Amino acid sequence: MKHLLSLEKLPLADFETILRDAKVFKKERGAHKTQPLKGQTWAMMFSKSSTRTRVSFEVGIRELGGNALFLNANDIQLGRGEPIQDTARVIGRMTHGAVIRTFAQSDLETFAEFSKIPTINALTDDEHPCQVLTDIFTFEEMHGSIAGKVVTFIGDGACNMPLSWIFAAAKLGFELRIATPKEFQPAAEILKRAGGKIVVTEDLKAAASGADLLYTDVWVSMGKEAETAERIKIFNGYQINAPLVKLAKPGALVMHCLPAYRGKEIDAETFEANADTIFTQAENRLHVQKSILNWAVS
Ligand code: CP
Ligand code: NVA
Image (cartoon, rainbow, N blue to C red; front, side):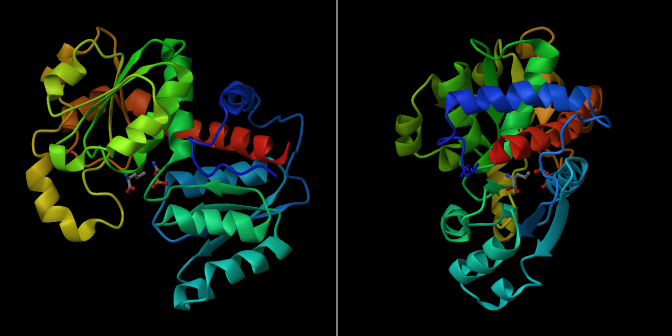
């Protein structure tokens, strides 16, 4: 039984398989030779908002021959306090796989354990593995192998996006720089566990210097809305804008996992100047989700 719960636990060979097959799914959209989810129904249980992840999984499941059953966690009994263990045992007996977006990583892990069906992390507070797989796929599609390159993440260094990047860096052999205020540095224990070449700094300019990819994410992740005012003060200046892009390598890519808040983590002009990359990155969610689903049932 395969689960995609975190990039930390994903073996390198599986990274490579998912990235390789995503190319085929992209190329053959509309004419897939196989229907690996034929006859299957996949549950999509979401406790947080989503545009890209929801649409890409729903479309991807259908285009691979399966049915997607979207369950807003607040509409099912889970939202009224039914334990995750019981929800998992019910869904596991009726469906063939699950895509889960929730808060605690431990809830996702409990679901996988009790449901006994392939379970995919569609974002938790700790990780967003499907997004980083797509980001790497997009980088390699536009710029060649990511091995030996420099990826600079700017913004909240303790949220799900940089944490998934941290676990990818050591495995795929690129340097990761995280430019973040000291209050939002990733835990030292996580960096130690991941290994690899990772630099954490408050110095935005040093982090961007010579980078092959500048990457950012929202300052206020889902679930942290009560901290909005404080975060806006602390993250002020941690922005991708034209002067910062000038410090990166000529031709460096600028990516954003979206949704984007202009004037906060990226300015409007830089966003529009890089819209082709950013929306290719968004589109690639579909092709990579198909590859993840195919991997999960293979
Ligand atoms: N990037 C991403 O996961 O977007 P959604 O929250 O819209 O799914
Ligand atoms: N860090 C963001 C990612 C959104 C795709 C969040 O958790 O809201």
